Image (cartoon, rainbow, N blue to C red):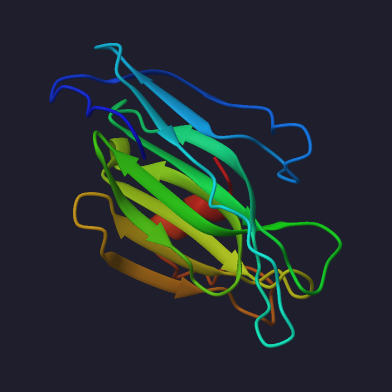
Amino acid sequence: LKSALPAKDAYIIQYYVDKPSPGSGYETGNLHIIYSDKTEIIETLQPKEKSTGKNTVYNQEGITEVKVSPDKKTIGWEETFDNCCTSYSIPLVLAIYRSGATILHIQQGQMLWYWKFRDGGKHVAAVWGTTHGPSVGDYQLYDTETGRMVSEVFGDPATQSLSADAPEWARDTERRK
């Protein structure tokens, strides 16, 4: 992120993702976050690297699924990356940014299926899983203040859904409200 930090009482009024530069090979451009005090934060894509015989590199391809929390101080997005086993990039990272600092950069090891803010922006719920195969999912709930995971529940492979006794935050996330 580059530029001055927003004022403490500033809130997000707009965001947009640039189109990729011609010939860049990216799927999207950078993310621009504009605050009520006219501060603009730019989240830049990671520079591309070339794979070698000894080192395979999975490059970031874009920024998608940008969402602003109800408090308008926190914003999140998915970062898509090359994938060895598909002809398209997949979301592998969930980034959460709040008024001057990236507070979460979650890479769970599987594809990010879906995410949402909860509790007015105090928490973020994410569902992770395999690129292809069972749609069971690993549901995780994070505190956006501390960045810590506060709860986790796995879907039931037999029913391909959460169990009836799963916590409400997970069941609500499964419904994708």
